[in-house]
Image (cartoon, rainbow, N blue to C red; front, side, top):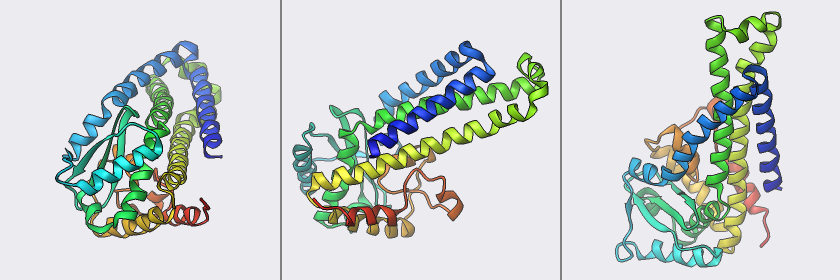
Length: 279
């Protein structure tokens, strides 16, 4: 169901892109916006692992230093039938974890020092299995595609906004359709952002489910999520908004309104779904 939902959301996002492109820039404008957004996001796709690991000062783990976490990753990678990813430790007190890399052959799993301090072995297995699920499902690629389309929509809306300010041809052609222009300028980018967030949430649910299957039980992950939620309130990470979607739980301290625009579904709902699973 999560795969179907993700595919449907990508289709809707593409339809918005085609609609906005045809309205503002015609076929040529849509193509230019897509190419520009594609180049930016492909650069991010290919080099994001190095960038994000450097951003959080993560160091590759030595098996002699952290044999338990290394052995957990190796055990679960075998169960997931993917190559053994590199293992990194980030010196952050905020308990969290993320996976990055453009493919299962070029992947890395990173855990913070904070997560190692509060989770037991079964809980760590649940978290690592969740991250390996993201790698196996190629969620990095899916989110790059979504970001490319959403970025192109926002870009075209920005172009149209500047054209309207400076009295470009597009604004004169649509003087009698001000409401339509306003809708496209404001609603389309917001709709694209919301769909992108919905795709991200859908992939989190899918990773929870597949991760529980890889670990052999949903209990470790459900207990870990509850601990991580509490731990992040005590030790919120100094995280970048652009990388927040990578983490297993939202590393940013969010208000009730901001939570509506979070890349992560509510912890309570994730735990509820995990506890209802039978493996």
